[in-house]
Length: 129
Image 1 (cartoon, rainbow, N blue to C red):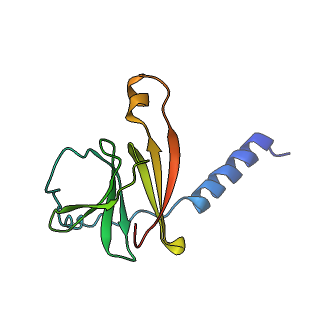
Image 2 (image 1 turned 45 degrees about the vertical axis):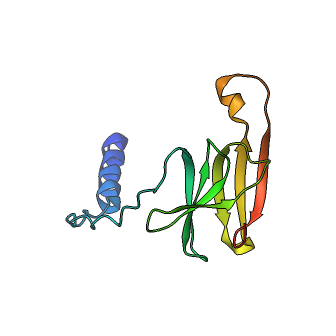
């Protein structure tokens, strides 16, 4: 009679060898980095960047101002959504299939523990703001 442990070990070795991943191909050199875009103004404290492919632009929120800006390839920073209810944009999402921009919004006061503030979700037209 065969030793069950030896048979089991042999089956495990055979399965492991048959299921081992194929060796990785040699690494290819990294692709060159893309263009660097430097914002032409400071102070707006960007948080979150989205590329709006349908309209060919970068969008960013602002923790300091709440405004949503477009960032041009030349570094220009242009207001896109100005809304008195936007206090501090803490995240954005371009929903291109529905032509909307979702903006998470909060009072900056809540970050410092200064009391209760607001938390809202703004929904804006992605094409027009």
